[in-house]
Length: 375
Image (cartoon, rainbow, N blue to C red; front, side, top):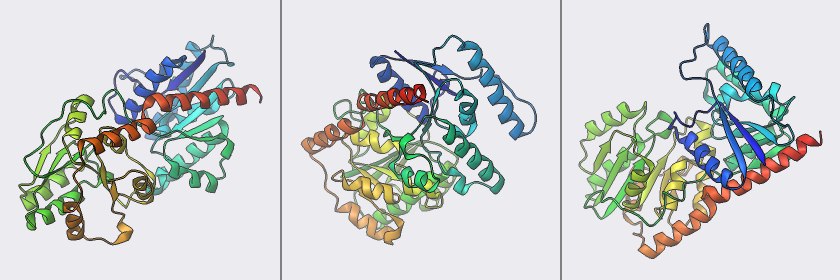
């Protein structure tokens, strides 16, 4: 049996969407015979001193704690892994790599230094690159990271693409469906309202739809540090075709809302280059697995992704479309039949169910152990 020791995550305390991915993978990995344990410091742990010193103290303390509680682990079947976000805990893998097989799991944070202040940029860049050289494997959830690995001269034999996905027990075609409005076309945005999500862009589209008297309604569910900007824009335009619920819903309720929509929305701020060009957001997989196609404002990754899923559409900023043109295109979108939505959900689940992802993940674990044993 493989022992997978995951560092820096307390799955019982956190509800961050990146942690949900690890929860779902853990559930399916255990079904495949992988024993999973988690290592994190208590929530009340406080390191003293400047921020950079706090980071070093946190890592040293956590490393000592891990070594103490894992002294009896067998290196032949034990793997230590750091998942998102790697910038805080990833360097712990460097000293651990001398004793055990190690894996770096990159979710959204590779190359995030492209839009950070200079000193933070340089420090995190060094942290990630020096860690990548030490680990047996790098697992990444966005295909667009591969050119970065080549550019940064990362050993391609240690990089493995393992897609993100959706909980197939929750995000399904069958299940309760919430009525969002009486409009002919219902759109939904459900997720974070951070600057890099650029949700206010959809308000501009809804303004155009309102001005041409289109029977389209948008439901927004979520919160974040850009919610104030969103609310100000909604107040400025005073649009009757938008409902905003400033909350995060349990995944089962979220799925009910997504099933009630004709299309789900995704957007990314072009100023955050890595996110815009590379990242496929979790809500894309969750929506598709419900049988709800996705409309998006993103870069090349979503351009390529949308081509593989009928009814999905991406407006890349490089195309130069204006909001009125987008509004007109939304009016002309087809309303999917029950059969079409079912087929979309079946196709999506076959690609993005955590059960299938876990099977591929386990193979990477086995290859990593073999590589470590043969060093």
